[in-house]
Length: 136
Image 1: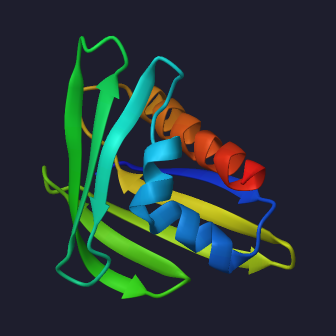
Image 2: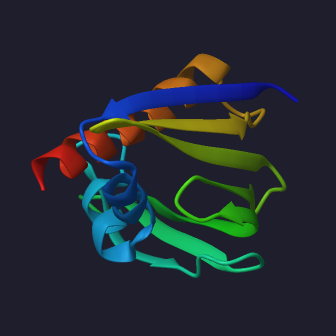
């Protein structure tokens, strides 16, 4: 299976970077790839076996979906892995670098869309996360 990685460097310490990535009240503010989409709700049971759910919708109501995953490994503040509803795996790693934190997401590609499109979409979401975290 093809693995795709996206990364950003956030001007934030690792503790804040982790909180803003994992807490639902923050997830809803950045978890979308473009300004015509939003994330109206999210829940996150951050423990092994716990479930992550984020509702992603077009703002005009034309389309939406639930992104769901189950955690299978958590190193609190540093990394976690999960399995999506379709069986694909992902890993998110937070590496503190002084006043900055590198956040890297590696995920199994799906076969419906080109890898470049998937990478661009996940990178856009990560870029939104960076912008939101640095502004708050």
